[in-house]
Length: 245
Image 1: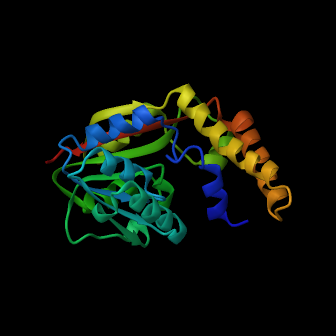
Image 2: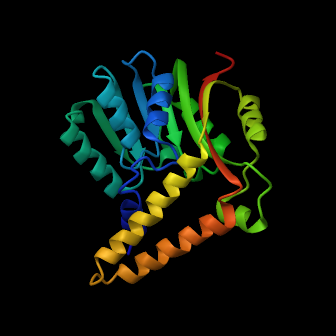
């Protein structure tokens, strides 16, 4: 089974592909786009859930999303039509790190997609290139809550702790104006949802040729979470403004 379909199945019950509950997503979007008539860009939008929620909440808002997955963008278009916001959403099928817009955006967001840019600071550089004067950036990325094992670092990456992560952002020319650290419940709910959705699909589709692979993947990922990084990895979302503006 290809990776995109596996991800789609895993996020069936948690369309926000990060450890954030609905209330947290709503608050972050409200802090990122306080007027409600902003032009919003999502770099690495996937199936567009962040944009769909922003568009649904604010009839004057317009949005664009960028992703390399044609399948995910197709899901976003279909969902936008179903929710009646398709006329205010533009989607671009290309590498998010290479996207250059002819017009700037009031809010640029990229949550849980820093791997597509090569890290947190390159993600912020890509956001800055598309940001309007006075605009805001909404970024979400991992950090180590406690000293990680070598296995955890090899699996997830070389993050800093929370203070170090914020220090890096500030040193890069940004000022946090809002932040949210995902709670233990949000972190656990996300993992249970992903690997539970995969396992359920496999059990419900025993005759499918990919069933055994999907169930094995769900089992392996759940074990990695419980045994390798559950007690050390965290997730922070920041609303930022350029300090020099």
